[in-house]
Image (cartoon, rainbow over all chains, first blue to last red; front, side, top):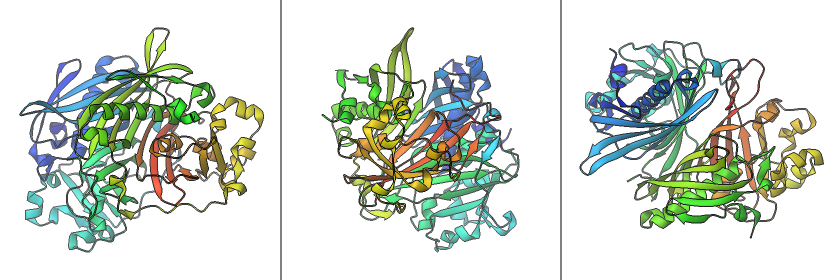
Length: 286
Length: 286
C-alpha cells in the first residue's frame, strides 16, 4: 500500500462515524499537514455518500470543499463524523468533522462542508482554463529533498513528496525571497503513488507557505481553505503555483492552482492563513 | 429603518434559533438573492456569538465565511439555526443553517461555516493589498436602473441598489459581451444606507453574473461562495470587480473584489456557479 493510501485508510464504525490514524510522517513542525487532514476528511465524506447509495454514490469527487481549521492535529487516533446534508441530481453536499481525543474529551480539529459530484461529467467541455506557468524542467529546479537535514527533520512530510521548486521563486531558501508573493514548482508523491482527485486535495496545501517568498518565515496556520476540483488529473508530474496579493493585520490569502501533466488546470484553492508581522494584533487562531 | 436593515431583522427565539422574513424586494427571477441570504445568515451567527459573551462577543465581523447553497429561497418566513463551534482569542468559528418550511417540513436553503473576528484588529497594518481598478466616474457608467422595465420587473433586487457598470464591461447589456470574463462597476445602497462590514457580504454577490460578459446568459446559481473581509470599509461608493478564468462542464468560478471609497481592498470572494453551456452535463444543482 502506498504511503498516501495508508494515511487515508478508514474503518467504518457506523453510518456516520469512521476512524483512522494520523501518522507523524505527515507532520510539519509537530502538527499534521492540513492538506492530508482535508484529504482524509474528504475521503470519509465520500465513503459516507457511497454508502447512502442512489445518486449520492455517483458523486465521488469533492468538486467544492471548505475546511475550517480549529486546532492543531497530532499523531494518533482520529475520528471523522459525517452528515449527508443534501442529495441532488448532479451534486451531493455533506459535512464532516475531524476529531481527536484531548485531555478533557473530544476536540474538533477541522470542520468541512463539501459538495461532491462526478468529476468527469462536471469537467467537460473546457470552455476556458488558465494556462500553466512556464517552469524549468524538474531536474533544473530546486529539489526540496536536498534541504539541510536539520530542516528536514522538523518537516517529515517532505519525505512523502517529490517537490522541485522553480529557482525563480526559491530564493527564500537562500535568504533572498523574491518578494513577489509567488511560489511555483513540480510535485508528485515520493513513492510513485498515482495522482488522482483526492490527491489534489492534498497537493493544494503541500507546498511551503507562499509567505516565505515575502520573507515572512515561520508557521502560517491555515484558518480556512476552500478548493475546487476542475478536472480529472492525468498521472505524472503536477505543476503548482501559489500566489498572494493581500497581507493585512496578521492574515494573508494564499491562492493555489494545479495543472496536470497535459497542462490542464485541475484544481484551485484559496486559503486565509495567519502570519506573524510586526504591529499586527489579529490573525492568530490561538 | 433602511431596506437592508429591515431585511436583516431577526427575532431571537432561543439561544440557537433566530427567525426572520425574506422579502420579494430582494428577489432575482423568483429566488431571493444569495448575497442577502449570506448577510442574513452571518448576522444571525454574529448575534449568537455576541450572546455567548467573553472573547466571542468581540468577534463581530465574518472575517472568513463559506456558504453552500442547497435550494432556492423564496419570500416568507425563515429560520436560522446557529452553533458555536470554537471560541478562540482572536477568532471564533460558528455554523449556521438557513431553513424555510416546505410542503414536507423544514428545507435547508444554505449552510454556512464562518470565522468571526475583530475586523479593525485583523486589518492593520496593510503590507500588501491589490490596487483598485480604474473606472470612469459613476455618472459616466451604465446605470442599471435605466435597464428596460420588463427586465427590472423580473429583478426587484435592482431597486435596492445603485449600480453603475463600467461601459467597457457592460457590452452584454447591448448583446455585445467583451468575452474577457470581467465585470466592473460602482455600487451602493439605493436608499443611502451606509456601507459596513455585513453589507460587504451582500455586495460580494450583488452584481449580475460574470458569465454575462462571456455571452452565457441566464441564471447562474451559486453552489458555493467563500468570502474574506480584509478591511473596515469607509462609507461611500464601492468599486467591485468580477472575473472568471475557468469555465468547464457547466461550472464557472467567479472571483469578486471590493474596494472602498478610499481605494482600499476590503473584501474578496470566489464562488463556484452553475451555468448552461452546450454539451455540459454537470453543474446544475437540480
